[in-house]
Image (cartoon, rainbow, N blue to C red; front, side, top):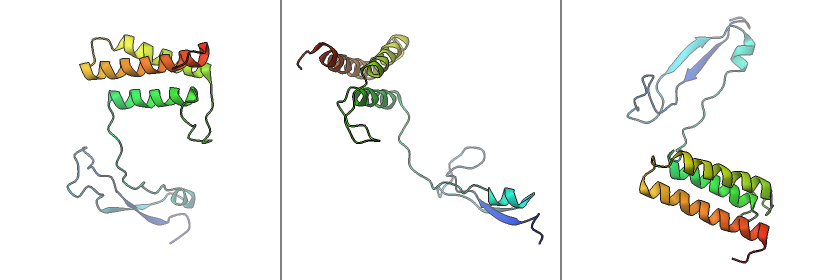
Length: 138
């Protein structure tokens, strides 16, 4: 076999079939033999990432992510990168404004629990923001 046409095997390790239905075994199917156009294409072929269970995507999870970011910006929670408490009050204000905009735009479209969760998160963040910027003791 020449260097220009190398064989490699691609194994589909996705937990679902081509039409989107879950596979019964949850893992990939059979390998597919392909011929590379050139050696660079074969060398650059990506390996399939291992199956990882990901958290569900829902509104409270999204709000919790934004809430956590604002808590980091307020210096209430250590920055996960530096492992130090850092303050960026303007970024925190921006995050609170973003959550406020979400509250306004989703009004009437949330379940009671989702609306309560968002309202409570905003209340807590606003109080912590006021404590940082106005010297209010909580």
